[in-house]
Amino acid sequence: MRGSTTRGWSFLAAGAWLAGCGAFLDLGPRRQLEEGGGGAAPVRFCDPDGDVIWLRTFGDASYDGIFGLAPDGEDGVYLSGWFAGAIDLGGGPMLSAGDRDFFLARLDEDGELVWNKRYGGPYWDDNGPAIALHPGGLALCGAINSQVDFGAGVHVPNGYDQFVVLLGKDGSLVWETWIGGPGEQRCWGELAVDETTGDVLVGSRFSSQAVVSGQIVTSVGESDAIVTRLRGSDGGVLDQRVLSGTGDDLLESISVLEDGDVLISGVTTAGLDLGSGLVVSDEADAFVARLSADLATVKWGQVFVGPGNQRPFQHVVLRDGDILVTGALDGSVDFGIGPVVDSNGGFATRLSPVDGVATESRSLLGFDNPLWLVEATDGNLLIAGSYSGPMYLGGVSVSDPSTVEPTTDPVAVALSSDLATLEWKQLASHSLGWETFSGIASTKDDAVFIVGNFYETLNVDGCDSHPSAGDQDAFLMKRAQ
Image (tube, rainbow, N blue to C red; front, side):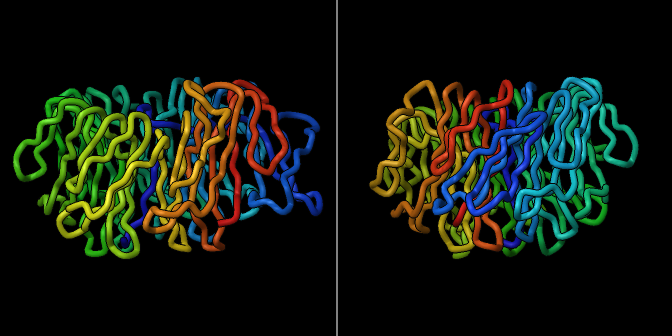
């Protein structure tokens, strides 16, 4: 794969929420965790012989969130999230201009702030942004229904408008492009960068009409999807393709292949025509397609129909060229080599990049929200999300026996490249609500960043318990790969 890709927050999937103030401190031989909030904070400790290198929490009385994570190309990370009131990521409090604003931040390998920025207007501006590393800095997409100024002047939307923005490595604006119209236009996290050309590929979900640089696109169903290629130098629209059926059609993941072709995956609730005729869906079914670089031709497309619901949260193009798709499964689905069955879990399927034919598929038993998927620098497959009951991977029990429905707890795992062996697991548990690891990234120094959220009390394997400072807090941890 010659492009970088990422996930962000989705109303239909999961998010993590970042709130308030907090800081990681190096206070001696033990790995330590400082509680967020104002004033002097008690220090919580992690096992110096454990896998967690450091863990930083953020929280105050607000209900805030983190939903974007991307490696910065060195040994640190970019984060995106939203907040109400104030948030301090290490550079002093940032104040919200309205109900909710969103932020971007870059942190170094030790969790220390490099820079942060706040965006938003008087209302709710909390959809996105998804973020992806770009040769010139950081690409992002999201949506607002208030107003925002990225540096080129204030944009006031018509309902919800979608933005695509390129920032320099210091956070300064390079260009911005808007997708607007009388309906809603949103980016759910489908964002990729062609590292050869610098072009940005973005997915949009819209209802009614969308306007991209003066071009009007009308939806056919309840909501349709658009794939757009934007020129890397100035954000101008190069190519577009609309995916439309009579129901909801949602892109979940997008990436760029070595030859510049574009790979997309998502879900359809009524059916799609991906070049070989309409495939009818009766509930929520997964689709994967390979498009030409100019988006004009569907080289191959697959809609995987089965009883129940299948939702592909993410795909990656592996170093060997194969495509791996993971998602949630409630029922059964046949990718062409036999049914995969799980009443409340996940799936993984490996597809040929040549024709999209499945070469392997299996259930991720009990992994009911495998939200993030990346290939680590050591070749292992990292998956992060949440579970709500017994969970087994590689023939090994992964879950904490105390986790039972309807409670969900975060989980991240490293699996061998053939998905057969569990290399490690990272669990966290909470005392209330629906929580998840909402992002995972592998860095050049062979470490792993994980972000998540928690209510009331955070319990991470190898660290002391940690109470939240308010409604919902968030955390960023770095652990050994």
